Structure formats: structure tokens, C-alpha cells
Image 1 (tube, one colour):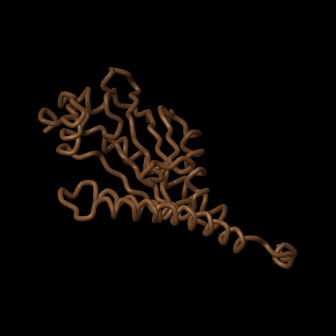
Image 2: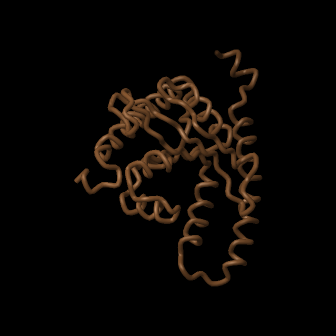
Amino acid sequence: MTENSIYGRFAGVLPEVLKEFSERLEDWNRQQMEKTGHSVWNHLVCRVKEENSMREKCRRRGLPETPESALLELNDSIGIRIVTRFVDDIYRVADHLREMEGVSVREEKDYIRAGKPNGYRSYHMILEIEHPEEDIRGNRPGRYRAEIQLRTIAMDTWASLEHEMYYKKKVKNQSLIASELKRCADELASCDLTLKTIRDLIREESPEEEEQE
């Protein structure tokens, strides 16, 4: 199977790297819940990019369909999307990722403070994750790349709609839909900030509660 895989002999290692890393994230989230009573995120989605998707991306980028392209030229063989309820939780997770042992940040892009022209908002990170298995460069322990996308629920819902429009071959009134999506993105950004303010007010302790503690 690995002989025909675009990931070559590393096809079996990528799921192991993903499993170990996602378990570390889940452990940290459980610790935060014990401390604060609140989960840092609503949910996270993990995947190793499917063979056909990686091959198609290589072709789109004009790259040969090889393990070197998939693991060195491209950065999303491993992908994790973390969906939070509130904007500040995104930065909280990003801070934690920077501090994780055996993890280094190759690239960061903040599309929340500076959204894309079409309205897209998200926080992107490219990480290199240390793993005992040798990597494609021959390093041991190896370093395996992962793309992290951090979004609120509102951002994630918007992105799924925009993705559907982008990949559908024939869409009527595409310019109108794009304009409406941009307007919606601006409104959702405002709602995200308002929801954070409401949350802070709800969690703000009253003098009576402080005395009881």
C-alpha cells in the first residue's frame, strides 16, 4: 500500500503523529476544564489528507506527485481544525501551541485581525511536530508538518458555505452570493465580539459571590 501512496513509506506514520498530537491537545483541554469549568473549544476535526486530494493539490501547484512534494513542498498532509465559541479562545489555543514541547511554528497567519477581502476569517498555523519515527529528511526523531486552522463557530459556518460555492462548478448569481457572503462575514465578526462581551459579563463575579468563596 505504501509503495503506491503519495506519502511513500511515511503513509503509516502520519496517522500516528496525528493521533499522538490530538491526544495531547485533548489532555490539555481537559486540564483547562478542571481549572475553569469551561472547555477551550467546541470541537476539533483531525485528518490525514486523502491520497486523491493530495495528488490533485500537487497537480494544481505544478508539483510532481511524490512524497517530497506532499511532505516538504506542501504543509497540510496533517490537518487539524479547532472550532471555538469565542474569539479570545482562538488566541489562547495559539499561545498553547507555541509553548508545546516538541512543537515549532513554521508560519502563522492571522486572518481574524486582518480578514481576507472576501470576508474569510481564521487563524492559520503551520507546525512541525516531533515524532520518534524518522522523517523524509532522514532526521530521527522526525519532524512532521501540520496545518492548524482556528475558528469560531460562526467563522466555521461561513467558511463551509464559501467553500461550497468555490468548489461547485456552476453557481447562479455568483457575484451576488459573494457580496452577501462578505456582508455576512462582517456581521458575524461583530456578533463574535458581542458574544464575547456578553460571556464576560455573565462570568463576572458579583461581590456576594466573592464573599461566599
